[in-house]
Each structure stands twice: as C-alpha cells, then as structure tokens.
Image (cartoon, rainbow, N blue to C red; front, side, top):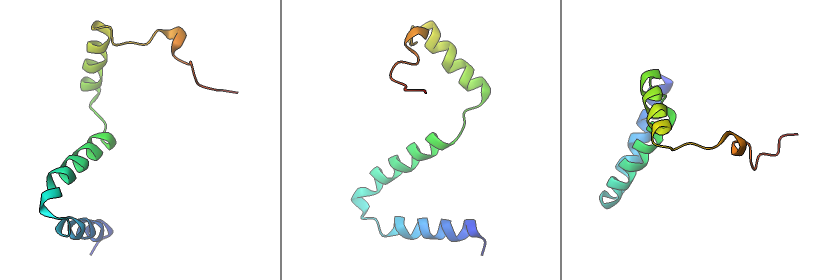
Length: 71
C-alpha cells in the first residue's frame, strides 16, 4: 500500500467515525480546504483580477504596505 493510500484510508476512517448530522459541515470544510490549496489557472486568475480592477475592488498602492513592519 502506498503512502497516499495509507493517508486516504486514514481520512476515510475519520469520515466514517463522524456522526451523520455533521457530514454536511465536514464536506464544506473539505471543499474549502481543497479550494485553498489548489491553484487557479492563469486564465481564471487573470479574469478574477480584471473583474476586481474593473469593479473597484482594489487597494491604493500607497496603502499596500500599511501595517507591514519590514526591517
């Protein structure tokens, strides 16, 4: 059994031990985790950035480094 299979089996065992009423929450957690660790395609990233720029969802350059204590 490969290392991936061992981990997958352990994850499945944890899921099987989860009470059914909590499974929707667990599914949401797993989806959010997957989305946070997978990279979007360059095209999707560009489209999102373009949309944000066109709808004013930007931070002024002068404020970009506010709060960062770079020494």
